Length: 127
Image (cartoon, rainbow, N blue to C red):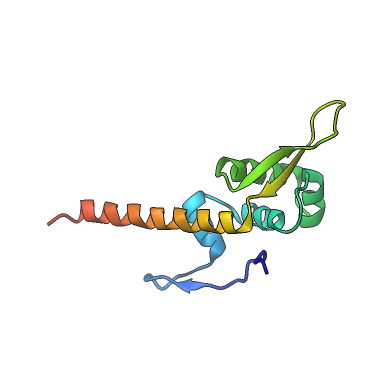
């Protein structure tokens, strides 16, 4: 079964602060809580347009579009031109990457981020 809800699980950091998935994605990708909500919504079900996301998440069109643009830029979601829409402005649908592919991308990016931070500490703390 695919995990598509944020569980609320928190981890304790060395500083004593705690962090959850939204905090981690915010740090690594610059995502907001709204961005994560949109991503999780797109992981549930088929590709959807902005109108469906607005209705489901009770968010403004501007918020949805901002989040979609950021998620597209981070390569966490994809945009698909709606088939059969011939007249007027094209309508696009949005879909998250495949669940396993998305999970692996996020894990790889977090590992890369941690390795870069470790390299920086090694450079700055030379004997």
